[in-house]
Image (tube, rainbow, N blue to C red; front, top):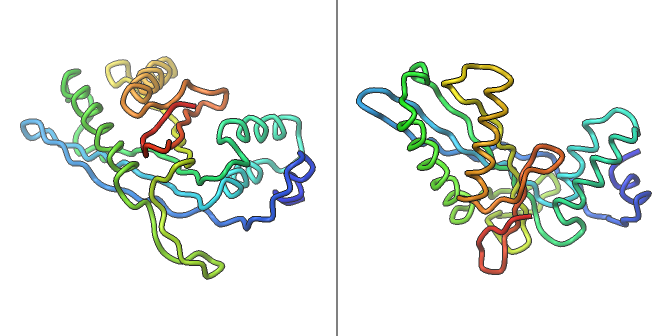
Length: 206
């Protein structure tokens, strides 16, 4: 069964094409505190329609389990399918040029807050992607009303080491900051946060 048939069984008749996942669109933000250097690299993975994003979850399961159906139904709700709009998954990576524990707590906070503000500009003020899809259609993607922004606020607290508790605390910290800076909604059952681009071309929580 493919995603079209699966959605039909759920009551959604959707004949749109399923597009392959695009590459990351990334920028590099360098930080230097008295010779202590780190590069923060925020990225966006744009999807040309919501069906294509649902297909990623659909293909992550090899069978038609109850968990698969639950995940798909939750995702349908979270990305407001089948309403119009695209999906962009937002995240960031770090290039550690030194041991990150050498940064003070104040320096780490400044890096995080400054980076998040630049992430917001990347989402709202830049072209995410342009080109030609595998069906020969030209496209350009930038934030438009109805688009959904998705993020997984996973991370660790370096002063606590690489532990399960450290990841739990770091993820909570990032989810709170994401709500304040980006206007993401609360963490959902899938560990993700969601926002929608409004008519004012700003982000609003889901």
